[in-house]
Image (cartoon, rainbow, N blue to C red):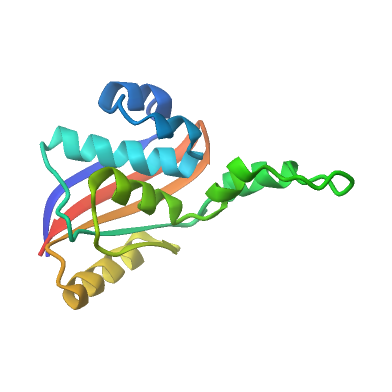
Length: 162
């Protein structure tokens, strides 16, 4: 497994500003939750800065400590016991694997996508190695992403080649 490209972003700028600077052509971005925005922008930055493209059979393997807790809390506030109509637009983002799905759609990736709740990046790297060795994928996009709030986030992405 060889590292092709790597990027770290944390609390650098507003994610919408980064989106406008590096992407700008994916209107679904504005409907995404914070975790999906973070993973999406970090991936776009990684690919554009290194002039790379994800292979069709690339595996997308993300993990983090927080999952989509930020959006879960927002969704919880829409649940009113007297008038039970929680927000469906927030509900879809109560699943942390939505970020990997968004990336697969955007990059036309048909390989495996997954999101793990993990304590460390080392665990994610071990899972990535195992996935690459067992699934015969040529590439793996590995990302440790944590989004707590607009001013408290971190992403470390590595693109590996087998």
